[in-house]
Length: 179
Image (cartoon, rainbow, N blue to C red; front, side, top):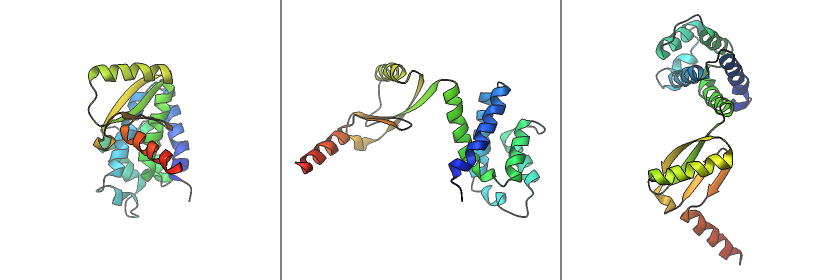
């Protein structure tokens, strides 16, 4: 079977194009995130694969839980997913949509993993450096990880800067093992 990301990609692009055409990227992003949460809920997921539940009923149910009214592009999108038995892909579709939106809006979500909470001044300086380096508006998401001992690991997609003390110790150990 095809990879989940590969199967989800055309749906995410279709949703993105519909949202971009309607100048409603934020609304679609919110809708897809909510719908993905509904589908991923352990109380709802058994309904999705059930032959006793019609796709149209699932669509109405998801719309109701997301607070959307029927009849729009969102309902048509969910109906298409239900018809093709792709509703379980909604979490991946939402994630891919968010990446497409961030790219279109020249934004970058950056994870900063640190041993201790960064001060406002440190976050401001880091944001300025990352904005210059990535040439995008940066949104920093800080994650605390005491195992780093000190320093930080900055991650944006495949780009990783490991300035942690744990990383330095591991690199020193590897160099000594080679010597």
